[in-house]
Length: 305
Image 1 (cartoon, rainbow, N blue to C red):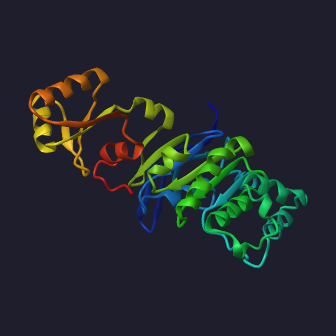
Image 2: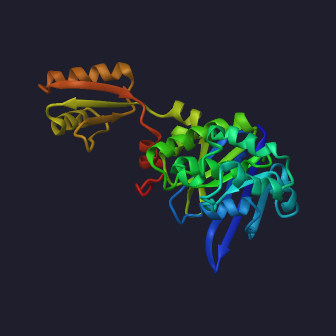
Image 3: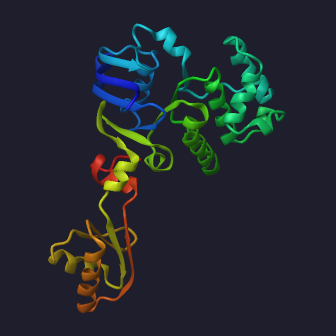
């Protein structure tokens, strides 16, 4: 597996306060990599270290196969960043706005059309930015970061502040970009559902260290199945199942949930409840969402958002 970003035992402190502690990270090339963690746990600092905007106090930082400390200038030329919301000039059209970047980088005039095509804004090239929706403005900001055809795109909370339609637009765009633009996407987020809907890989940051790192597909395949039951007496049903050795609980919707249940075992549990006089209205056998799994395991105390 080729690696676009590799951090080994990275430390970073500000004013005596340790933000990153022995941080390890491996980001596969052409992946959409979600870097998850609560606000204030070091996500933005990690992005700045990867981009060469902040120097690590200790450890190794390799980006696109190069040492960021020794070859920062060359690496920046191949990296697109959207760390803070850019200043979009409302009176300009998208091509006029992007021409600022293309001229600074001495790129041909057709570069603006290329990146507008990538982010799905070519049909809106004549509309002024002031008339763009929030999602369109964020796609334009991504287009600005894509000018020059970078091999790596670093994004800090790319869906922050967007309405549901805007979030969906940006998520779909990020999922498609590795193939469309031949690049790796690394984005920081505190939203757990970003992973399942957008990413191919992810890592969880907690107190400055990597708590977990995995492929989304491999994790989903390995998640234990959950049986969710709609019954007339949830508390009694949960007690009966617990007495038979199952970890049953009543969720916020009043349904009885039991983890680690095969389809064959589900039939036996149905029969146990029916024999005890419990009325069963519905039974759903499924895998938990990544968000549910994170809240129970990866974050432990339920402080993820």
